[in-house]
Length: 438
Image 1 (cartoon, helix red, strand yellow):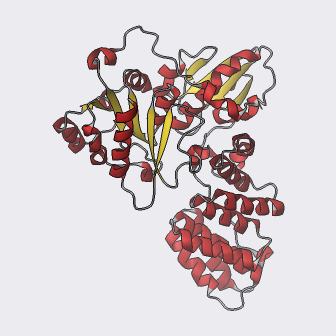
Image 2 (tube, one colour):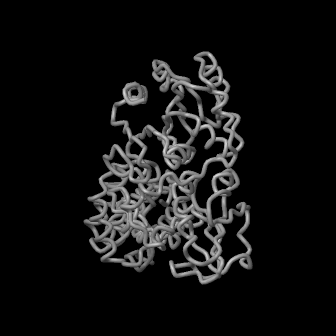
Image 3 (cartoon, rainbow, N blue to C red):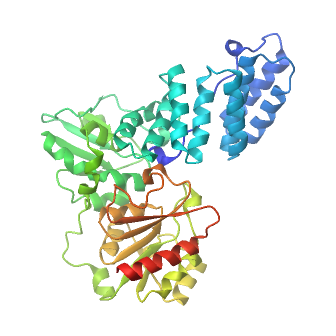
């Protein structure tokens, strides 16, 4: 949800309403330059300028709080969690009624997977500013991390009101947004949003729309078309670098809004699997190629969104101790990695995949999948394939806190890398589990 990453606290422009002395031109220029640096993403420059401003004598408390809040935001984007936390704490002390400082403090707790404490700060912020979309959207993420999914789905509806909403979906429609009412013959557009993993995770809700007495179109990313084209009651239309023409539908809804609009019960999530149909063709070329015996697919990296999720191919070599055929499902494979795979007798199947339909067929021919947090992990779970998911902490909120399983995918085992632990140690443990279970 929302990329499953915490969202920066609101940027507060420094002005006379928060205590700036309009007769101090030097201070005015300094804070303006700092705000501009923060807005354009030059966080090092912004931090230096805010620190200079904070060194000025006789700063009014409200101005100090605003400066500290924006300095905390700069530190946050530089991944200086301790410095950011200290700034937000000092800002709250200087002005307890500054909602953005409360939100920033909540974000810092969420960054450390301390979501219960994060919620306390978000709730305090919303008492001060009930319409802060950024606070609501971050609150949704912490609720999801704590397993309070229905509340999280409701709060997540604020995501399209935040300033960076175009990163979820770049287009806006003038037609009515669908809120869960019967369609009564109308055409509903479900539009894509966020990454391939998010889309695969929420595809499960599309077949539920068939009962609403209308026509359903799903704007589908091209690599996922083979997964959706055979789903019952859904017309898959290819996504392009332009909005869907409004004459093609009567109302619309974002894909990740479906569980809230449908009034879906989180307790029913496991029963939705498997939900990705198998290839309509009776013949799976991968099954024919790989034959009998234990077959394990694996992926060691793939996330450009969050590279802390990725491991190295060498970390997966303990899987060689299994008496199994090992198959790489990795799409992007470097030349040196291809050489390593070949040297160890592991097949590089993923590098030849044309789309997720090929990935699906390969997974169906396997006995299990071992993967870091990638879209393929979602696809393996959607197919109800035994899957070992390897997470670096703090992990994406969709996997919740301290759980070894996932209500989204009942055949998934979640394994978490703790501080000081190496990926290879996790793989050794997973290999033992596979050996005893399969």
